[in-house]
Image (spheres, rainbow, N blue to C red):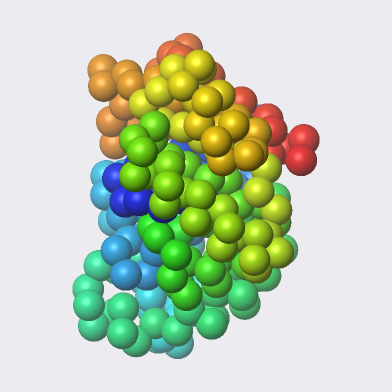
Length: 219
């Protein structure tokens, strides 16, 4: 999952897509590759150590950093600045390769913007799903994210537009010259720290992420 702006719902999209893929029968792990500002642990309301930063700094083995306590496995990040400076993003290829042999699907939650640290996981991914709100500056930045993904030869299957209806989502997808995977409505009553796919499986939001999972599974 990649997006041009922080706060666009990228991590929430990554988590819920992961749980939707799990519900479809896939073994899934979600990895926080936003080394500068990781927040997977915040979105899920949990914590776990060691982290991806420890793995990339050669402090702990990858196996120790995989949290398998839930249906979807997770590898979290550490927000400490010291951990950030020690973590080498070049090691993400080895991490992704090894996780790819242990799980059916590896979902990467990337950082916002167009940076080297965002380009690395995008270049490793089979598919780069764009995530944006309908706000003008967010769409403009997501367009640059799409261009960056294409420059590193990543496949962009489409966009998830958060806090939007289908009509708005289709308009944003057309502007980005890509497919609309899902428009996720604003449902503050059903979204929380627990994935909406599990918390409210009959909600419109859960259905939207189910469509994203279906598109990726087919792709």
